Length: 147
Image (cartoon, rainbow, N blue to C red; front, side, top):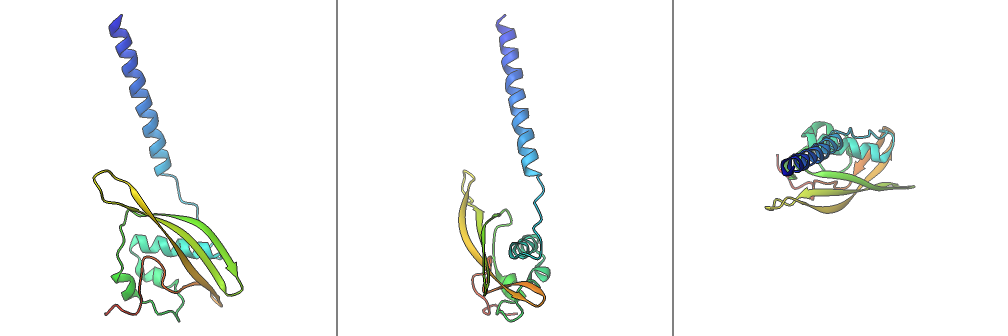
């Protein structure tokens, strides 16, 4: 009788662990919603996707050509590839737009976790669509990198 209870308990534990694993796999594999490229947040999404993928040539094309940031500045930037980024909010005005993002960076400690930074990526409207201006994350300075 005692052995039957132990087997039921073990089966219950295995069932719960399996259910949790399925939820984690489902959430982790959830596709990212693609935002319309005609909106400021769509341009920011494309830029960040390119940056994280290491496609700096594509990412730099989304910057305002009159801005001081170059591909050398992007090459010199550092960020953890396991970063998680969320859109917080977008504001538009007559001069352009600002897309606030939350960047979650692994803390690298013995107990894994993340710390968060908020950044605003600024955009201007040009004849060819929205372009990022200023110094967007993950760059912290532009015009300083040497080629």
